[in-house]
Image (cartoon, rainbow, N blue to C red; front, side):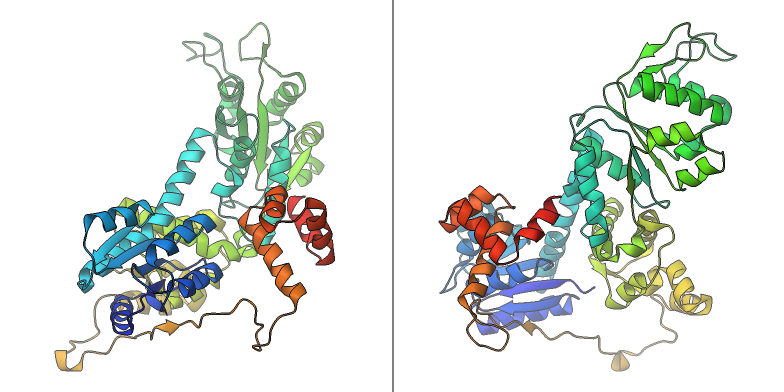
Length: 495
């Protein structure tokens, strides 16, 4: 997907020059000739990668544009361009949140470096924030990339599960992010910031499962040279995440049932039970009900774990999240590898969206990591994903694409070098909020409905603030919500 850049300048010559520099560097430029038009474009399109903003414009200057962006929560990175190189101007711009600045005229190399730095800043900051939240036990639904409709119910159930210590069973295919769902439940509940201990039940040797979970006393068995607290004791006061719980041996399942029912554990070799306060969240990539029916899993333990089930859909059913996940992984891995990878090309995006991702998000993560390590370009191409290409187009096509990477089939003389593909700047017309698609004036009810919707989104659904901002009472606001059919949507979002 070609990264879009919004260029804002009231000087048509400068506007064209800056857009062409961005175009040659592989970006897709959009242009605006004033601050109001720029804000309108930003409000309609949150996926713009960065904005190059002139400070001096007749209708709304650059400072006012940045102030409006901050007020409305628009986080698109801003690069300031100015004819005035005074230190005071630069400091004011940076205080308003500008990622970089340059004085006109700017060299193409300087502009491209500035753009690439600004592009990765936003995504990288989000990745760092999410990783910090994960490590500190404060991970919330805002830290997980899950805007697809298929994930709405999952996140709603997470919010409800976080309000109590009810046992939760998370079911889903391998690699869908079951541990992140568990972390959201922990990070938004009363145990936020407390220990979060993960146990992969399928990765522990059967003869050590009991010791790992419940601990052991010195001399309990050969090699037990000292007391060892188990995972339950380690998670005391916090959350214990039992991954692949269906792999537990039947004799260990009995002890787990007692720990859940009585809040007590009995370490191997202990003479008495120990009290623990642990919130248990379990996960499985198989249907636990089927295992219970076949006798591979204790039925009484199944009902104890399955009090609050959450099913996490596979990536192929939430493809709307693919671009966001890719942006996150590209930002993270390109920073780790010390590279400036900005995104994927349109052809590569078509290839990845057409793939069914049997390994889900974990497979996507590993695929992006491999591509980042091996690529030398600013954008990932189909040949950077040979395994996906082999699956989609056949092994011969994958080998052909990879063999052509960076090495021409034959020498190309400078006189016959091919012309690179160019994108003409897209000039977006300034939309009028009071006119419909045909250019006719909208009805007053439509304008009012749109204003109420905007106010609700702007204030994050806090109705008292919405009513105050619109200058009406809350009862009037709720009446209008019902009149315009907005109440049902809000109630379903909050459920």
